[in-house]
Length: 480
Image 1 (cartoon, rainbow, N blue to C red):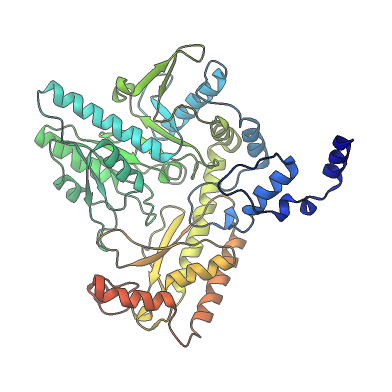
Image 2: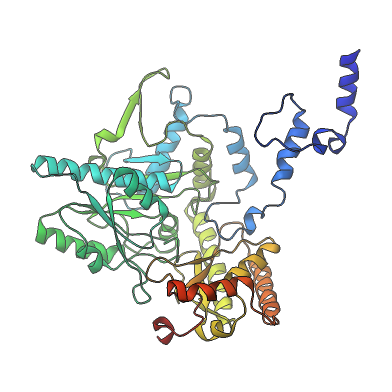
């Protein structure tokens, strides 16, 4: 009888009439008793309700839209563990097919049927693998020469993504950074070579710098490095961090040489979950030839029913993203990718042009080479403004937009900028809505009688740090 009463109570009580919905959600202890799946679902769903809608998040690079079939395919593979090749051999083959496709997009010269590459959780793991391979190759050369190998270093611009800081710290490899400046907005090849020595394992140019959206000139670097290596006898290589540009350049600027067509580019990493158009959790790294992938990076186990060899920092990982990437390659083809990336670039250019025309703002670069760009306040406007770009970020967030404000890397960190990343799922109509919200926000800011708290805070910080936040008074950069 009690069971029948409980059953009737369960099926008759509305979700929002349940006692669980009137009680606090668990914080530090698992609940004593179970609840219905409907109530558990709604509690978790409600907790995310107030967040920004993913497609309005213009701060993130990761994919926030895939079509229904891709989503269905990935949902159906959510319980598949990629690493278990015994049970899911076709998933491993599918991953290898994706590596082949990307290797050929990046003009791989390798003649083998299956190219040298590895799956990663994201471009961070892919960068790590590319860096580790360069380090191990350098170490083997040093051992063979009877030379010390305890002080490795690599060279990169200050526009690096945080993974390279992690790589340096975790593997105890010195990171030498080439400063970005207003005159040198990307990696300066000569400055990079000036930091190299016999302990340099690689130079890391970036295609799609997170901070600015610009591309390092890999072809110029390769040319300068070739002359440097001939002169010194070193074998310093290039690992290209193409987290964003690796999926943009092959489709929109295929004639540009940045990839395996260049002599010293031995590995490339990219993010499948960015402009590869797959939901988060996917990265790839490809080597120019199998001989550049050290054997020490391959690990084998036999406790899953067969001997399985794997390259990667992570072991178990979902197969869903692999299926999603292979689906996108089949579904979109070269022309589909080209059309989507071109639309993203055109919308980015439109936003770049419109924001550049607004009285308070100046674009950081005249060029739009990836579907993202940054801008800052004009010095003259900033001197009189009672608000900052952080206020604009906060105001836009109230309408659901996430448009980040942040300081640029060291040496140019007196610039506070804003960035927009345009991805698949962002339309011209959405761009117009964003522009209208920006204009409305500026109009309200210009009515302010007193400065905002962020403006007051920035003004107070200037004499302490000697920095010029959003250019509120004369400085060298402003005078330029």
